[in-house]
Length: 259
Ligand code: UDP
Image 1 (cartoon, rainbow, N blue to C red):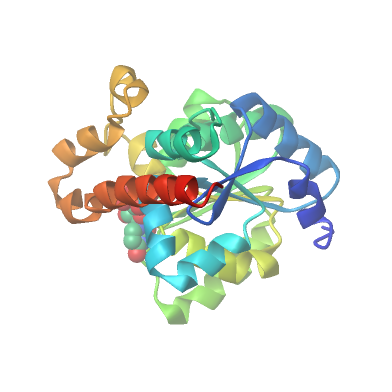
Image 2: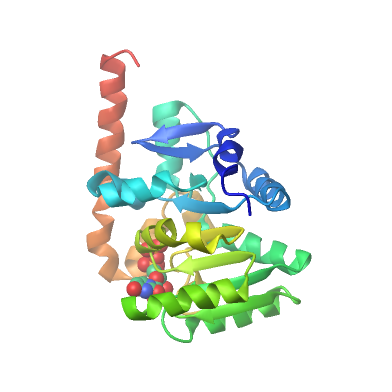
């Protein structure tokens, strides 16, 4: 894989700045097309699907912000980022939820004979997710599965295992921002053609967690559904009003300075 050309490739795509995070303006179709082209050109791609919570985390934690700087492509995962792009940049983005993008990648992999490695979630969940996806997409090749509760001491072994398995696509389900910090640290060494952090997607595919009904997702209420089914997320959700506040503050500060 040619690493040096990665950044030239991504720079062809226009971005909209959301509180310091450049979000690429791509539709679902364009994103998949770009990933396919980059794979053909032997460029590695680390893709991040960004939600409001991750933007706030990046603002609070410079380690997260600098990890995101290393990503090749960043797209809008949730309704919050779509709203912020409209509010700050007058740009209409398509919502590209991580779980749906990851499933598109798996579908592509099954069609193209690409191998997928599943890293993350509780023991047994990655295997169950892979099994469900093999059922949905017959012919899907699994490069390996490993749970996400490993120690620092086990990490080197896992890295070697992934390198040895040679996946074309690496799905990392360690939750945000841990998966972003992990990929920022290791993607340069792994050089997997396509790597993406997929949050709780394995739990969804394995049937352990339900996704919000489509109407809630379209209405920007996926967060409310997740709060109802996983009340332990309440603390994390405090990031959402902060996100709204920060976006509005940026917008009106921009107006005052004429930007
Ligand atoms: N997880 C993991 N290792 C950890 C912490 C979390 O593998 O040390 C997994 C967890 O089991 C779950 C996923 O990461 O499958 C996080 O899911 P969540 O819905 O919280 O994702 P997020 O909203 O953070 O994207």
